[in-house]
Amino acid sequence: MPPEAYLAQFTEPAGYLDFGRFGPPSRAVLDTTADLLARTAVAGPSTVDELMRQEQRAKEVVARLCGTGPEHVVLLPNTSLGLFQAAFNTPGGEVLVAPAEFPANVYPWVRAEEAGLLRVRSLGAGQVTADKVRAALTAETTAVSLSAVDFRTGYRADLAAVRDAVGEKLLVVDGIQGFGVVDEPWEAADVLVVGGQKWLRAGWGTGFAVLSDRALDRLRPVLSGWTGVRDAGVFDGEIHPVADGAQAWSISNLSPVTSGAFAAALELVEDTGTAVIGALIEQRVRALEEALSAAGAEIVSATGRRGGILAFTVPGVPAKEVGARLAAAGITATARHEHVRLTPHASTPESAADLVRSSLA
Image 1: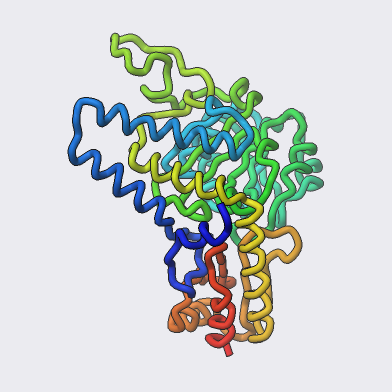
Image 2: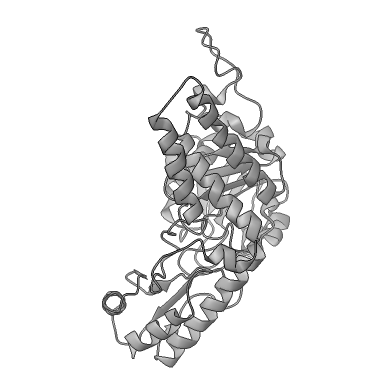
């Protein structure tokens, strides 16, 4: 799919620069949702079975994007559930987690520790690098968990280098801030968890986990529901053994409407190419960076290995006040206590940079 056809799928305002929080979905997602939901309104003998095939459709495109097979993929309603699965299924020992991770990648490990299942040890402040991970590893370490792209700074972890540092220990990766828009060796992760509501632009209630052979061999499917067992459709009053592959992480059926919408969003990424989408985003980030510098702002996010996240401050002006000024000019951004975060997408027009510059002048 040429870039023009991809860009024609989106209609968000020029000043929308908050994809790190939520990505307005495409026409394909909206149309698929409407079509599948309309089919539920005239349900017939085969409607439910036909709609349930949307889950396999989504699994197959995830598998293609990750270079694996559908048996390694399980769909999830959000990133948090996948990380809770990873935490509660990890076979004890010590897990390394950075304290500055997004809370969705902290609480699952803390809760698992509180349940007596493992121990959590901090990787310390700052960016998660291979050297830092290597120095922190001990004989008791069973897993390392980190974000592919840091939600605060946009720093893009070197997953290949971290994989080398971790060795045979488990590597859990929260990929929500990068999957579909940055080229990464996703196969480096033993557990890759991604929500679809941000950069994938699939809407809320969408997500997946991809499990490596190592993960399938070591992780116990503690949180496995009736859809996560063999012969799930056989109701014989018996407790069935857990399913083979990643399906063992399934707890219940997801909405087939949501699964179909997720598949449509993923297919857009596949047809266009992550490299194409990522290059357009990098152009927008650079243009915004220049506009901010011209307005006297200071860039506080990563400028080397980075994703689509651009954080800045205006000297002497509180971040909330800067955020309010941007909002008054029609710019949607994330204003936190310490900085303001801009996260453009491929569909962000070039005029967005001028809008930011003029609003801060």
